[in-house]
Amino acid sequence: MLKALVQNLKIWVVLAYLAVVGASFRFVAVAHADADYDIVILNGRVMDPESGLDAVRNVGIRDGKIVALSSESIAGKRTIDAKGLVVAPGFIDLHEHGQEPRNYQYQAHDGVTTSLELEVGTDDVAGWYAAREGKALINYGVSSGHIPVRMKVMKDPASFLPTGDAASKAASSEELKEIERLLGAGLQQGALAVGMGINYTPAATHQEIVEMFRIAAKYGAPVHVHLRYQGSKEPETGLAALEEVIAVAAATGAPLHVVHVTSMGLKDTPDLIAMIAGAQKRGLDVTTECYPYIAASTALDSAVFNPGWQEKMRISYHELQWVKTGERLTEETFTKYRKEGGLVVIFAIPEEDARLAVADPMVMIASDGPRFTGPKVHPRGNGTFSRVLGHYVREEHALDLMTALRKMTLMPAQRLEKRAPVFRDKGRIRPGADADITVFDPQRVIDKATFEEPMQYSAGIEFVLVNGVPVVSDGKLVDGVLPGRAVRAPEGGR
Image 1: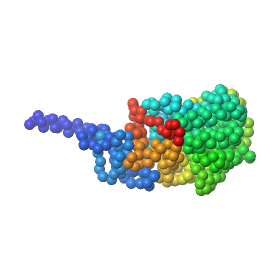
Image 2 (image 1 turned 180 degrees about the horizontal axis):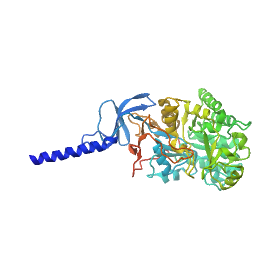
Image 3 (image 1 turned 180 degrees about the vertical axis):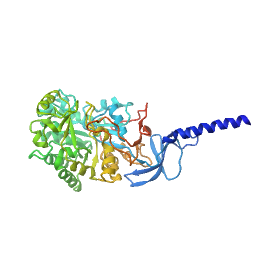
Image 4 (image 1 turned 135 degrees about the vertical axis):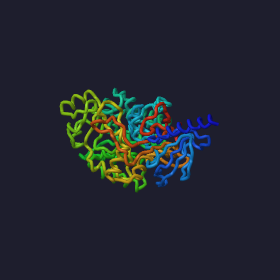
């Protein structure tokens, strides 16, 4: 009897110790013999943009899916206490060039569960997906890219954005046929969209653009377009460039998505947004996105910086920051580094226009996150979503929380779900949806990445689940997990 009492006392001491040690942690891994779920998220403020639900609920997860949403108590093999936290669909980033493990870590810390390279894309869709299978922290997807396909066909020497014939030469009829063939092959391999950066291929004729849209329309794929022009210097304005692709979309029937509207419109951003809204009201399938920063970023050796760039963007050398060192450029260093090749950050977007786009309910949020090529890379790949939630929602009151979440989750999913039905179960918190979930503290969430120190994780993102597997727990990356899956359209055609 005494022995049994001593044994029980030891057990209670251990349990008391664990309770004290675990008091500062919200994640508790406890096996329940009668548990109904793999993981339960308890007491969180569940916000679902599709249904409008905004209430305290308990979420039950099994086999990578949300299977229960209840106000009643539920039990799981593992439990997350989300009291005081928001439980939201995982963020879907439509525009992220950094598709490597290190980029995925920063994105996970920013609440992103699905990262998509849809502007530039790839010339080898099957190979792109195969290279990431079983190796990704978060979900991943890609477009069939006009830029890399054109570079391949025209034997451009550059590795990412064209600097040779693909930028400066019109395609011959034989080259155009091969570009069309390869772009279509990528769509047959399950590419989510057609990617197009007309500003980087200025020699591509209007007819070539029309043919690319026709291929997209054939496969029911949206075309994610970086417009031909930016700024407000007539006749090559952002507005004129938008007119070009809206006309082609209307003529071909291809869905159109205009990337980073603020960096194309600059001070004319309100006019571009108004034109897109007008197209929507008249039945055209046209959408757009923005990032919450006053600076753009691209390759200094690209066609964007062909003669006339200063007048178009209404900036000069000093508004360019060299990513490799963080220095602001002069005429001399501009010439030097343009020959060398590399990324620059471009301070050209008026703050009032960045704020207007972030606040507009029609404009989605997407990072345009860069590949890591230097210590002063643009911070948008590391802090976009937390910046919207922390700075523009909580501090600026530019938009409400539910609207912000809709722009980061449901709207991107809806943009892609016709082409790729897998997205019908993303961007939502409901039974049957994929358990891609971001749990954050609305009072603490904020971006930490800055232009001076961009390589910093966001704060206030407490838990991130990808296909039901925690990849961020108590604000820290979880070691040894790679639950990210390919998101792609059905292979073989429509």
